[in-house]
Image (cartoon, rainbow over all chains, first blue to last red; front, side, top):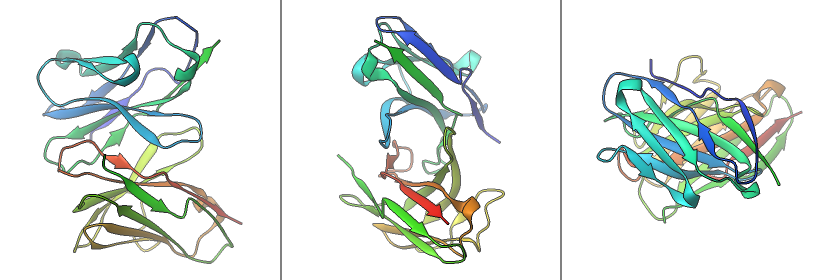
Length: 114
Length: 115
């Protein structure tokens, strides 16, 4: 079965620090990859997605992620975090042609100190 | 953009009663909708895939007789938690996709508390 693993359960950073959240998936076939963010008390929002093409994907709010197929990874990065980035971040994968069924990682809680 | 509406946003019920949660795609047709469950401080766990006009597909470990799913139209899927117990208290989230592999759009979720 497909699975998604996020290495960090809780990350604490100061403002302006750089961020990298790890995500690995287990599936050998074609996948689509996503990062979602959930701000406190709010629903999930799509940060960015990778379907094909350039493995470096840019999303909203200055986030980017790099798909490294050989490592089955899709790490999320941001050069300089802000207090407003405090949220839960979820990596997710769909297997091609499975109708959009998303499998989520465990989530990483990011706390940014002002 | 595509919007998924979920109702109610919050419900409190007594143990043994049933609760129905609605998920609507407001500006697009969704042949497939997904139901997730999220426990506090945990990730979203896929419960079932709801297919318009056919039976839902449940994930392993999810009781289909307890979590009844009906997808009667291209814009509405319902999840009924039957004979609810306190351990069913959770955050239930639905999602839908415009096309098979496009990003899912999520509803705001339903906070169910069973007393």
